Image 1 (cartoon, rainbow, N blue to C red):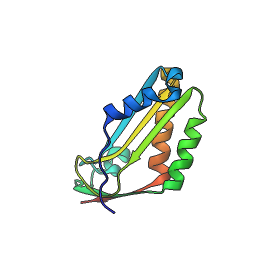
Image 2: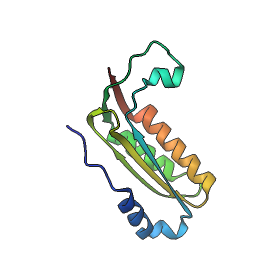
Image 3: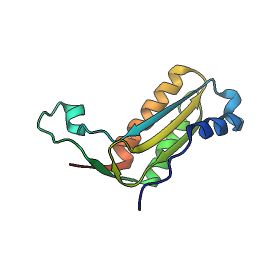
Image 4: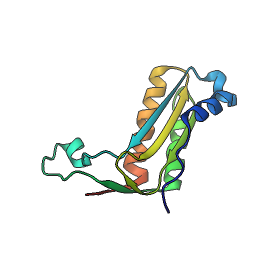
Length: 131
């Protein structure tokens, strides 16, 4: 399976604001993860002996992602979530994911976005860096 069509954030926001949940949302945050040249081991652990990344192979477990979204929807003050995940072989600069969270106040939305993106990255996807 190859790369997917990139969603429009303008369209996502328009759709979110048309959703019945919009009257409860005072904030929407979007995370856009992209393929970077620095290896994960270098950025996360400070490993100095890593090669530059030229791309990655990305795959998501849809069932795990759906469960992570449902858990995030149960967080305090969260009323809207939308997730898009790419697929296949990606090159530098390609979009890996978009995650939108809408909720009542900033602390709730920031917490939910951080939790959901962390769960997706750590429990729901496989990323194989290419060098």
